[in-house]
Length: 285
Image (cartoon, rainbow, N blue to C red; front, side, top):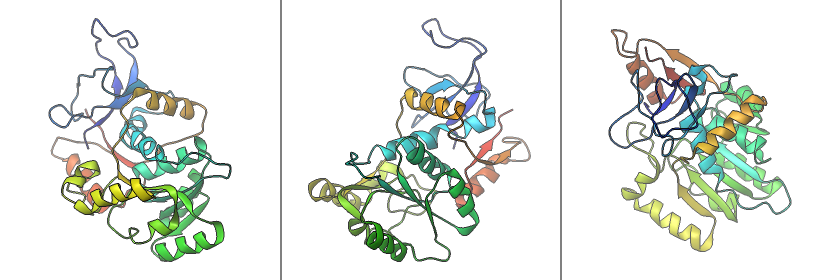
């Protein structure tokens, strides 16, 4: 939270050439310490912060829901092995969430993959509409058994992306993936959303380090990844959006972020519940 932004350029520095006052932009302010985006004004350096001009087809609220999750999705799909002829197969766990919905869309539109989406039954139609070829309902189907049935019918897959965390698929991914494939998680082995995920979990979960090393030696590969931070990927999203090839999903725009309504608490609660379809956006007055 507090990393994405979308708004209007108030002023530009003397060395900025690609943006002018009044431009509508969106992007990511990703700093471990210091400035975040829960503020009326922020300072952005286009040389180091991912930023792009907002497409007219998105509102500011919609655009603000995109940067972190779309850049993370691109980082995950970078782990796809080279195509060898047949259509590559991708499995996405947590397919209806913020990163998951972009993984489904980009895997189809930009990489022409066969996508198996794992989500609840209430979101099955949503992810199918995003482009998923098959849906596994984790509330009524055993995920591992269903994936192994797919394995028997269609062969091994190229990529598993876990947007949920935990260890449910760790005993089976080496069978489901071929040796050049990859199991990528954006969370790690943890399931607590209140603690930091991503590559930092290597430091407190030695088993992840062992999997990473084993994967590079024998395959399939294993990685806990973060996001890409180049503006060119946001510009790709702009092009796809303007052509109508991708869309975003905002479940709710929460007003009153810092007044007596304490909107930030509602947003935090929704994140902890892990039942959000797409993203929740805080409106900054």
